[in-house]
Image (cartoon, rainbow, N blue to C red; front, side, top):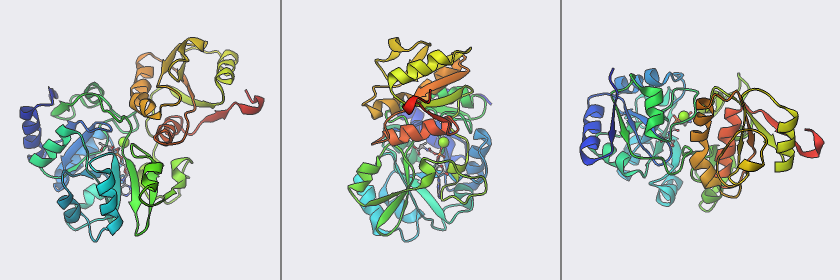
Length: 341
Ligand code: TXA
Ligand code: MG
């Protein structure tokens, strides 16, 4: 299959919508990461997403909508809290897990009786949804690889697998949406993302699922199937070093090796004894989120074998950055404090 890459425009969005209405899969920009979209109400189209991405069948997809009336159609008696959250954070990087209506095919929800719904803010995504249907869309990376924050990343992963990618520029958030299960008077944070736990706390009580920061045992039941899988992994071996910059540098000096790279905060590049990538200032988690996946992909382009990463703060969007790094690293964190290096 020939994969076309077109800049977002009125004409290309109309073409994308036409392909989607015809049951094809299209790579679309969103403000978080690029999505691999198909008509959420067309089971055959949805199945094509799983094939293109190589995604495990039991991992459900998020449905993207462009207006609130779709929330009512796709869900069954959502708690009133979901409308308050929608008002506060939509359009934007928040996905609510809610009881599904009969309209949503089981292919989308992987057999669950809930559905994840999000209203993206990217203008091209909104236009394409308006001209087609609600769109099921996972991140547009091949399963297991870092997510795609530029059209070129999508092309690298999906060339020959889908007919069209719409280039809407670099994703401004850079990490995926925050996934929450919405209950009557609290939410459970299943995946941290572009909306922080602190922002959610302005509206309601927030419980953080242990899967956000801890590995899941293979036989453990999880509320969000995505928690079980290896994720966001470049080919390089990612290791988080938790300590100060001097401790980080001294660990690198005492662990030389071929293909060793460091991922450090901006401004630290010249202080580190190995080649490095920087992923934003230490006190700026939004910039770290914006740069994270691109850096992980760059590490592979550079032929890195091992990437030692500075541990980011876990507040605000930093929790999402740390969560993605933990998964890239297969939860390998080496504490440097207390002279363990
Ligand atoms: O920002 C985003 O959310 C991006 C863009 C494209 O919108 N999408 C995205 O999709 O990250 P994906 O498929 O890569 O991640 C969706 C996550 C998975 O961990 C999945 O298990 C979880 O959401 N999820 C989806 N539906 C669910 C449901 N009904 N119950 C529990 N978890 C669900
Ligand atoms: Mg994903």
